[in-house]
Amino acid sequence: MNTYRKAYSIVGGLLILEYLTQFYLIATAIFTLGQAFDGPDSHPSSKAIYGAFKNADPIASIHVFNGYYVIPITTLALIGLSFAARLPRKTSWLTSLLLVLLLLQMALVWLAIPGVTALHALNAIVLLGLASWLTWTNWAWRTPSEPEATVETATPEHM
Image (cartoon, rainbow, N blue to C red; front, side, top):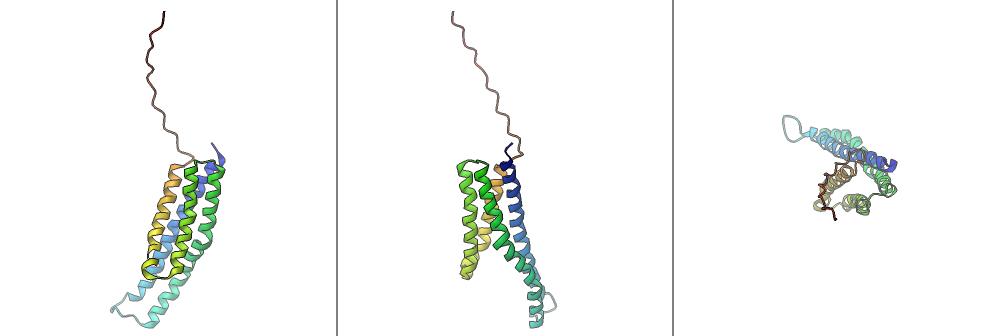
């Protein structure tokens, strides 16, 4: 079994975990902000809102660091491994599409247009789905399915 193929599977799995970490981090930050609204009335004080943002900020910072540095490096490594493992051309191009979608992901944040920026979450789902599909279909340790035995037809012998 090709070492690069194994590495592609491992790095693909790592990339999926990094994407899932992104979902976890942003959900944690949002629910931390929501704690300001926990209480007897639905109008928190400015002190409660400030405290919630102060608590959520480190979590959101990790989300940004992971998205701007860790995930791009892992994505570039996966692209390189797709070519090194000599995977089919279609697979290598789809793996490269992960980088294009990641750049789109960053652009959606930079635009800062509320309706457009909301596509950031949908694009994240596409990234996770594509990375999962690529890793699953190219998993190095999958046992290949046995080809069905062909029934040999008896040919009459020529006399």
